[in-house]
Image 1 (tube, rainbow, N blue to C red):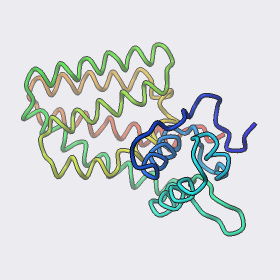
Image 2 (image 1 turned 90 degrees about the horizontal axis):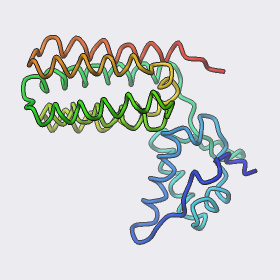
Image 3 (image 1 turned 30 degrees about the horizontal axis):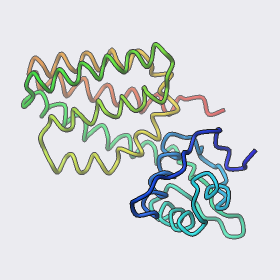
Image 4 (image 1 turned 90 degrees about the vertical axis):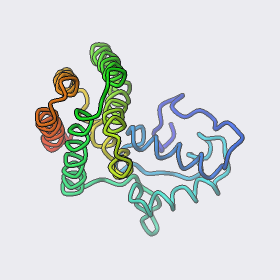
Length: 225
């Protein structure tokens, strides 16, 4: 059993070509985001290198970059550990997310046509199927895709760029509450689609603000055990 604690088969060997350091960084960031590597978990360079089929050097470089970005804590004489976010950190990030996504919903209602709405409907169906199958990973990924599509339909490049900066952390915080949010989250998504289709900017804004606030409150009320 590796102390990195990764389930068997979680991490495939990295395929070439491509900048190795970037691919190692992305692989580790995805493992942290999905909580395959959980907050507080010890990250052993040699074991991660073995999982990824690379030498220790690109792993070391990736951990240093992840430390700079706040995903990993490097502790003297102890090593690297996945960062454990404080409640304040999560609250600030999720509050900013509410502001960005509420505006995106308003703009989507103002700008969207039928093709975009059909994509949202299909993503919502996929999310509902994931919840029914208790497939948390797929539910989280589909939730992220749904919100990204709303952001795309908003048609504001600056807003999209800002949202992109917080998207990875939103997924990080959403993963432990995805099962708890479950069906209700997708009911709220259906309500949002209806408001966007009706071109009701105020209603779309209200629904998205309430939706993201529900997630924020659920995160703070989650089982931390």
